[in-house]
Image 1: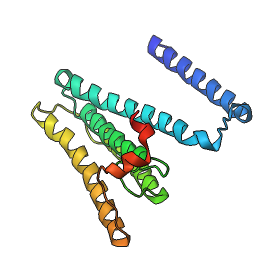
Image 2: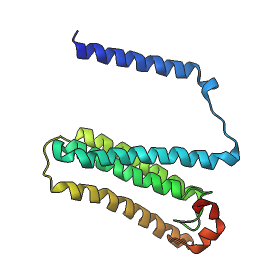
Image 3: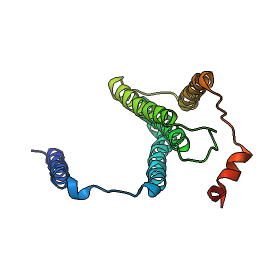
Length: 185
């Protein structure tokens, strides 16, 4: 057995032990939060998730000139799209102030969350199924613009669909500042 194989077995064994420990102790590990603290805790965890996704995307942007790997570029752009969609999910959450969307709903925030999860699952699968190979430096900019266009098209499509049902404004409003001045203090 080589050193690399032994290390892989040790890491796998530790992962299985951790999983079984969590499975056995899941009732004592469950956290319950008061309802009035849920928005703060959800926002904190959501922004942590966004930070991790954006860090992966920026790491791909910065390390691209050294690697020039098509797979790394796909992973980085996937996490850029996921981070943006998670940000839209966090900002359109039902109890958040109406800075981005004047009338948030459970349907809107859930749609952005589902879009982020589907984007992550599909594009990470494609990143590893499609062949890897070298890519030109000039293609990097285009590769990072495409996820932003994708997120923008999802937001606009959702806005158009909602505007048929009722009027929704994707604007920064002074009224939202008056309703929630604590956000900016």
